[in-house]
Structure formats: C-alpha cells, structure tokens
Amino acid sequence: MSRLVFEDLVLEYEVEEGAVRCVDGVNLEVPEGKVTALIGESGSGKTTLSNAVLRLLAPNARVRQGRILVDGVDVLGLSPEEVRRFRWHQASLVFQAAQSAFNPTLTLGEQLLDSVADHGQHPGRPPFPQRVRELLGMVRLDPSRVLPAWPHQLSGGMRQRVAIAMALVLRPQLLILDEPTTALDLITQSYVLDILQEVHRTTGVTMLFITHDLAAVARLADFVGVMYGGRLVEFASAESVLRHPRHPYSLALLASVPRVDGQRPTRARGALLAPDLLHPAHGCNFAPGCPRATERCLQERPPLQDGVACFLPEVDS
Image (cartoon, rainbow, N blue to C red; front, side, top):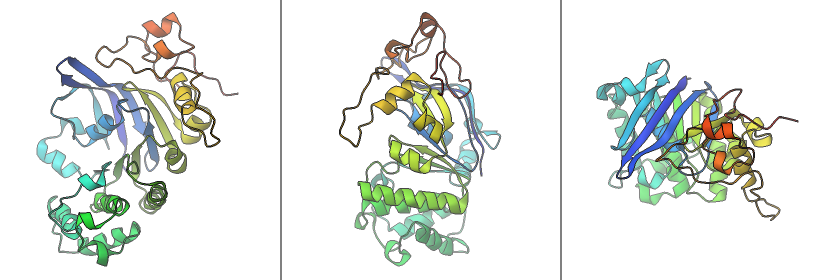
C-alpha cells in the first residue's frame, strides 16, 4: 500500500490567453489501502491531478507550487530515469479509453510482456509469464484467447480489463483509474466495477478513482473528494458525501443527477456556474452561484477544515 499526499499543489496550463489554473492549492492525503474517488464536473482538475502523480502532464503544463509525495518521496523532483522506474513499479494508471491504450500492431500478449521488459525485467522468466495469466484470470479473461489476440478482436469491456491487468503486472501499490467505465455500456460497467472490487480485495492496492458516475462511487469508493474549479471543496467518507453533503457545490452537484423516478433534477441549492480558471477568485470560487454566499465568501478563500472548504457548510441533522 502506498501513501499519496498532495501538498498545496498549484498547476497551470499556459495557453494563448494566459495561464489556466487547473489545480489550485489542493491539499489531500489519500488513505492507504482504500478506494478514494474524485468527483466533479469536467474541467474541475480531477484528471490533471491524477496525471501529475505519474508526471504525464501536457507540455504546456506548469507546476507553480506544491509537492506530490508517494511514500514520502516528491515525484515532482524525480529525474527522468527515476520517473521511469517509478511508473508501473510503484504507481500505475488505467486510462479512460482502452481502445487508445494499446498498440494495434502487436498482440495483447506481446504488449503485456513488453511492458515488463520496458521496465527492466525479463518477461520470459518467472514469475512474469505465470503472473500475466493469473492477472487475466483475476479480471475474468481467458488467457488462451486474449494473449494471441489483437486489440481490435476484443470488445471495449475486454480491452479495459486487459488494461487493468497490465497496470498490475509489476505489483504497484498505487493504482489510478481515470474514468475506467465511461465508454462502456451499463452491463459492462457493472461487470468492470465487480472486477475492480475483487482486485482491491485481493491485492489491497491503494486506488484513486476519477469518475463522473456517482453510482460507481457509491459501489466502489471508501472516501470521496469533491473538486470544483481546480479546488478540493469537500473530502469525507463516501457515505457522508453521498448522503449528507456539506459544501453547497456538493449539494448542487448531487441535486443535478437525473432521478430514476423521472423527476427533473433541481438546482435549488446552487447554480453550477463554470468558474473562471484564467482569473481565479480571491475568495470561494463557487460564491457567485451559491445561495449562502456572503461578502466574506467573495473576499476570503475558505480553507479545508473538518472535510469541507466552506464558511457556512451544511450541518448534519
């Protein structure tokens, strides 16, 4: 199990109009051996935050301040060779679109073992051939069918499961999942979530789960962080956030989810306005759409205290 800590992290993208602050002063300690979900709208900084752990940021990204600690080591200070050793050994990532994660000119067996060789191991020697087969079995795939197959010969759900197996080959202690079920149909999504639960139960790996799917959060996550405009506005147990959200943005986000009974979503608890990332607010960046906002909210940024970054949070009844 790995310990992942973000310390006052600020990340920006340099664009023609200026610097887009996509991660704005995030402080977060991801619980070891647990599944932590990050939720929020598109553009809230979830994927940028997760990609930063593995140093997979775009060329125009800039770290303005802060640290990312994995087992006490700041990954932002690693040399290129140290980053190479860190990836897939200590931390690995399952990308959102499995169809784009594989080389179409190699069989899946070649790619699974190539990932081993690429990180300084001998893929033909024990334990790797057997481990690859065991991992494919863990994600409920038949090795005799998958290993000689080309990526296009498998369904999207099967490719996603191969990607999960590949991410686990070198026994990382931190697994980051970036929208792993987004491109899948509902039945396949449920199947993949079952597999992820089994993987976590079997390996005890620390998971950081990036998603828009609140049903998946309720099913898989132990803890939930809510992001808005690059800032972490709430962090608590999954049950607490989903049942009793305390930040006005969390309330608005959950209220906007379509209901199974057909009733229209409501935004009565706050407007989901897009924050201006080119000109970050001095105060709370949700204040312009918040029904509780005061002058203090507009002028002063609330710190994350007791799991919520709000001067006037909801009080559990």
